[in-house]
Image 1 (cartoon, rainbow, N blue to C red):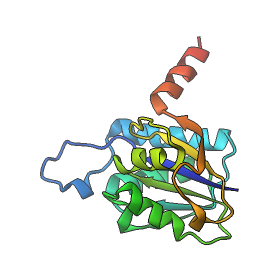
Image 2 (image 1 turned 135 degrees about the horizontal axis):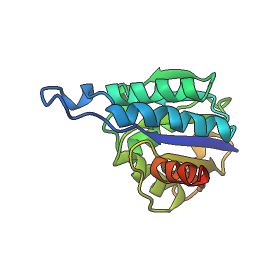
Image 3 (image 1 turned 30 degrees about the vertical axis):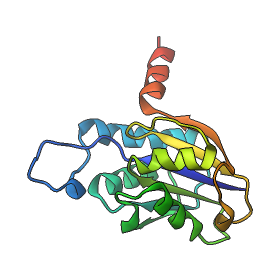
Amino acid sequence: MKTIYLLRHAKSSWDNRNLADFERPLNESGVKTAPFMGEIIKKNNFQIDLILSSPAERAKQTARLVKEAGELKAEIRFDERIYEASPLRLLEIVSELDKNTKSAMLVGHNPGFEGLVRFLSGETQSMPTAALAVIDLDADSWQEIEPGCCNLRLLIRPKEEMKTVAQAKF
């Protein structure tokens, strides 16, 4: 069995309207939320062998902050094809993973990520910024992926998790 983690980048800044979309960094909220998601990954003991990230600034920052906070040993690789990728392009990227890789996390953007969740699992789910989808592939190799072959095990939305943490403190 293989597992793919889809992590949408954390909230980005629109403060500098002169920046190209590709260059937009995380805003203050995103800088806090990305490590929070890393802590959730650590708490759930998710095993991630490889991190593939869009090279857009907000995705790179998210990948690095999540890796650090989650104490992940996985290498981060940046793949320009993830930026503005369609679900089929993302599927192509996933299908190129080495057969010895048991799990990989893609860090990127919508609408491609929501579309890939729908393609793989048949479920329509919203993926707000910093949301993490955990998808189990009912396949022995990355090349065997086809529509509906996967199970959406978990979808973690940071606002819902933060609300749960806040309520637990009272």
